[in-house]
Length: 146
Image (cartoon, rainbow, N blue to C red; front, side, top):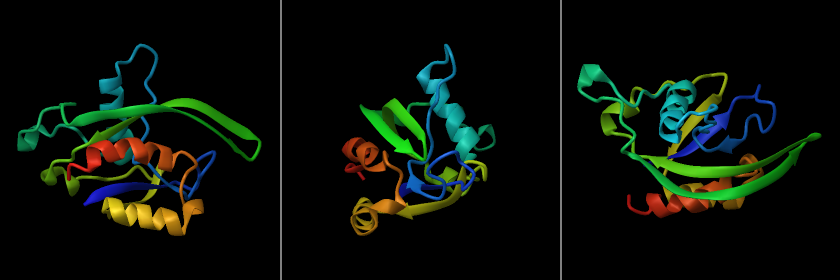
């Protein structure tokens, strides 16, 4: 199964309640992307990419770069104009039960196959963030391996 993404928390400044990618990297000034990715997995999904108690050190080797796209959308007087980099994280089975989403970021989490995600999007595109399908197109390159 795949993580379709998350229901964005209703308190987000835009797209609250919409389904989207699991988390965003948002690197801090001078922060290497691999560390930003690990930090956001921890902060947004409560997923620690390393659990010494079960022998898993922090490791970004299972995070795969899928591509980048330019994105622009307007929301109630606001606008976003970004370059988005898409990554897929292969979650070890022993970590799935440890996911504890941050309620300020995520209100729900769904596990679906790629075809289920695409069928849902075809039926109800308004349920997803404006950038979701663009990101999914890049992620599919990695996801088709499963």
